[in-house]
Amino acid sequence: MTNNRGVFICLEGIDGSGKTTQARRLVKTLIKKGYDAVYTTEPSKGLYGKIIRKQLLQRNKRVPIVVEALLFAVDRIDHIEKEINPLLDAGKVIICDRYVFSSIAYQGASDFSQEWIKEINKHAIKPDLGLYIDVLPELMDSRIHRAKSVMETKQTQRKVREIYLKLVKDKHLVHVYGRATKREVAQTIEKVVFKFLERIKPSA
Image: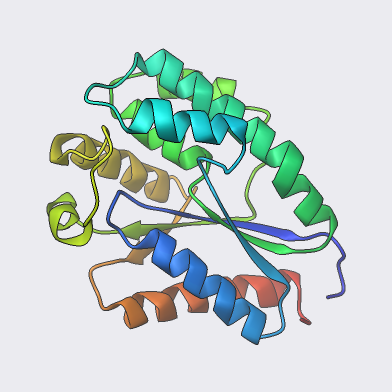
């Protein structure tokens, strides 16, 4: 690649949208095309991410939203400092499964101030490209075959989707129609990503 700096791409979506499957698939496709791509996720695999997974998500009742938002912000900065920035410095193409937009959507869906959420995440680096895989919340039950997290209710997911669609409208995210087959969704994502990469990194 002509530019040594890496590329940071994130995939967003409500629970059951298939973004984890698509993120991992995209990494494999990028590698086949000659890009040095890596997968990462939020919550991260670090200390704060583990706390979120064990103490926040697997509960019968959500903790106060301010606590939730702050913990996700702390984990995000830790993730950036320990994983994302070093990978970018090494020239990697990073595919991140959820990022700051998830905080805006999920904590914002609880009628919490989106501006405050953005403020506590102001030190998070801006992704080079963000995609939103759009599916209806009604599909969640048929797609999630594990114990659901405290956020995985249809009521919450409907509000989350509304915020994501607003982020698309404001051009923070690129809309991807997610109610097609996995292969069709993957092809749409690849088309967007490769077009973007060819523009900023013409040679892989």
